[in-house]
Image 1 (cartoon, rainbow, N blue to C red):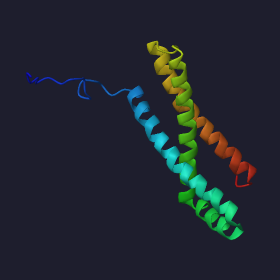
Image 2 (spheres, rainbow, N blue to C red; image 1 turned 120 degrees about the horizontal axis):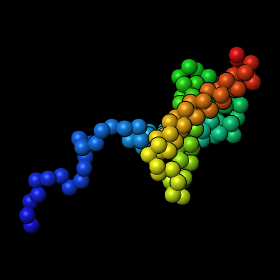
Image 3 (cartoon, one colour; image 1 turned 45 degrees about the vertical axis):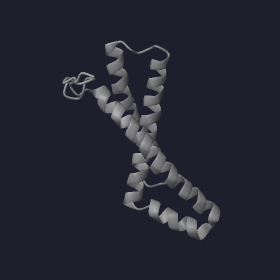
Image 4 (cartoon, helix red, strand yellow; image 1 turned 90 degrees about the vertical axis):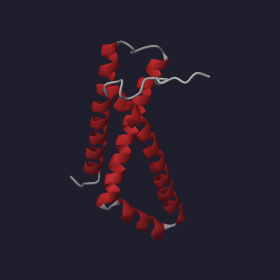
Length: 131
C-alpha cells in the first residue's frame, strides 16, 4: 500500500478556533461534571437516609466556601448542558443551521446559563435569608 504524507482529515491547525468549538468541548466537560455531581448528590441522599448525625456532617462540608463553589459550578453545568442539549435537539429537527442562527443560539445558551444560574442562587440566598 502506498504511503500518504498528507493528513487523512483536517486538524486543529487547519481551522480557526471558534465559539462553537469551545461550546462543544464545554458541553462534554459539563457532562462529566454532572456525572461527578451525581455522585455527590448520591452521597448527600445516602447521608439523609442514614441519619441526622451523618447528614449534618455532610451538610457541614457543603456549607464551606469550597462546597458552595462546587454547587455553584454544578448548577451552572446543569443549566449549560440542558440549554445546549435543547440547541442540539433543534439541530436534530433540522432547524438552526443558518450561520447567523447557529452563532446566535450559541451566544444565547451561554447568556441564559449564566442568568439562570445567578437567578437560582439569588433566589436561594434570599429564601434562606442570607441576602
